[in-house]
Length: 125
Image 1 (cartoon, one colour):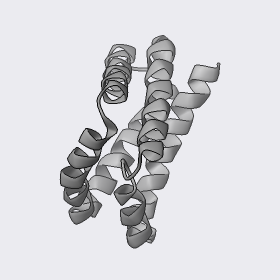
Image 2 (tube, helix red, strand yellow):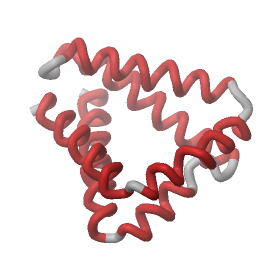
Image 3 (cartoon, helix red, strand yellow):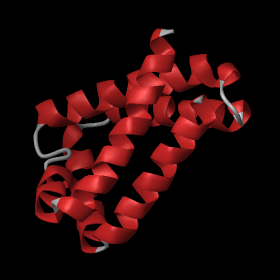
């Protein structure tokens, strides 16, 4: 049950992020720019990502397209572990390249977040 709540929270978070890109684009951009900005934000992000990944793996059998979401959970989990093992500055350098792409195409990024969030919620309910 806890894994289901984490999966639902992830879907709602993505939809909320998508709404923020439309309603408050500057705040959404500022939020995204803080990813990997410090060791604390890096480790917090990876632990949340790890929790979400494990939740998807555990809850996938209860979801529509469970096989797809199990793979998604493994991708989240393995990339979180990898990023936890690598120096956080490497993640910071990658974020320095990737975040301007996301914030420069905020409507596309927001649309993707919205579709993924709705897809997750559809698969749960």
